Image 1 (cartoon, rainbow, N blue to C red):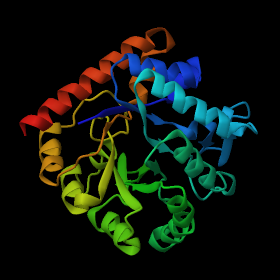
Image 2: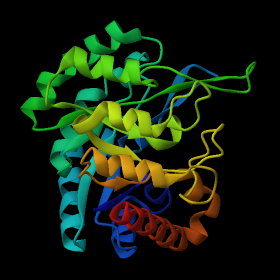
Image 3: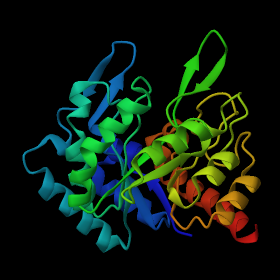
Image 4: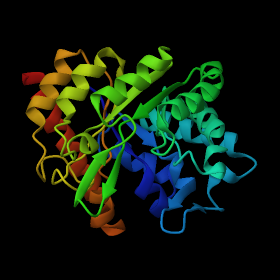
Length: 288
């Protein structure tokens, strides 16, 4: 089982080349290229936060991405997947999806994670994905949808949204039924729900359509994005289910809050810690 982690915080602090080098030095096999770092979303203002000096906005962005691929090759690692900006309901962010697919192809990634939009409903999401699939297939890239949630302050917990339940996730996959449209399971999101939904049920329902993971830990209520084995998620039944369905993709982290909390001065330590957490997870998988 191969390991991967995002470039997000490292790239913001040190630049993308150095981020890849640090991930390689920590012992990871691959990196998840955080394309979304070019444009985050301010949910309070309902507006995109455009990072205008991001390399992906430059006219030579393809050259830049090809250079990153070479940097990774020199370090003995590669890009296994990327994460596109979100949410899709914003027109500017929606306009970045084809670029995200192109960048994924140029950097050597097999999969681009594109969130389903929580406000679209099944039909709206299927329409959005179907518009992008021909372009993705032309570039040899798979699109992965992901299980989402909404936080309900009045309830004090999250509720599942697009792909957040077995019924919703399978409905999205069944509506398209294309080998270039696959699933990314966010383990943290799956374990936050109070409706009985859990990662094991989603894994078994998705089966061999599960091609990517976002691995992190939480208190089973909040989206903490912490290092595995630090909070409340029980990974033993999860890795057992992954083994049962024959999951053979990467163990990819999304524990950005751990890296962010340790800060720039402890960036090397955070990556080493994260790699050790995945090694422990792989050991569980092998012994399941």
